[in-house]
Amino acid sequence: MKNSTFHSLRSSDGKGLVGCLLSIVLLAAAIYLGIILVPIYYSDFNFENDVKTTASRAGARFSDNEQIVKDILSLAKRNEIRITKEDIKVERFAGQLHIRVEYSVPVDFIIFERDLNFKIEASSFIGSL
Image 1 (tube, rainbow, N blue to C red):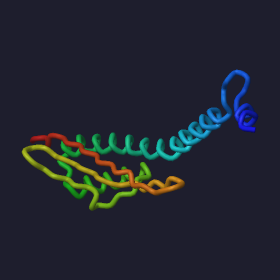
Image 2 (image 1 turned 30 degrees about the horizontal axis):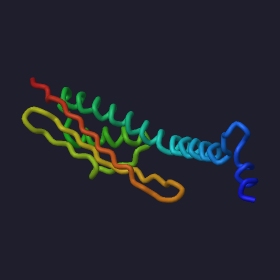
Image 3 (image 1 turned 45 degrees about the horizontal axis):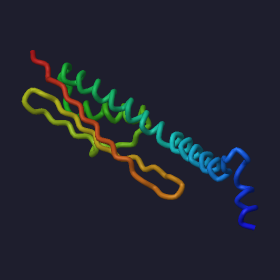
Image 4 (image 1 turned 180 degrees about the horizontal axis):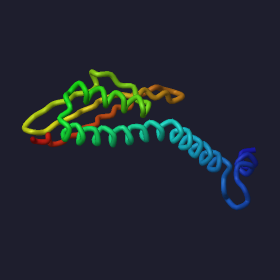
């Protein structure tokens, strides 16, 4: 009886049904993770580039901190990222403008939920008159 069960799980080429099923399950899991995670990381990538551009422009235009925060909140909304004013830190030190944005995105995997934490840092020299 054992031999016939074992034989039904293997083809004549020696390739097993279990290995094929395991490969299909792993491929499906990879596709699922890609569908869930790629848009989140893509939004973060775009948002980080936008924050760096904003930092360089703000340094050249002498923008005040409130305007910088408004601009970053607008960029976050455009990239579909939920942040608050408290997530944005703007500092000026030694002729430089430093912007730090820290936020989390909750991700619901089927079996558990996890927060993905992102930290964006950008700096620029403040222009002189």
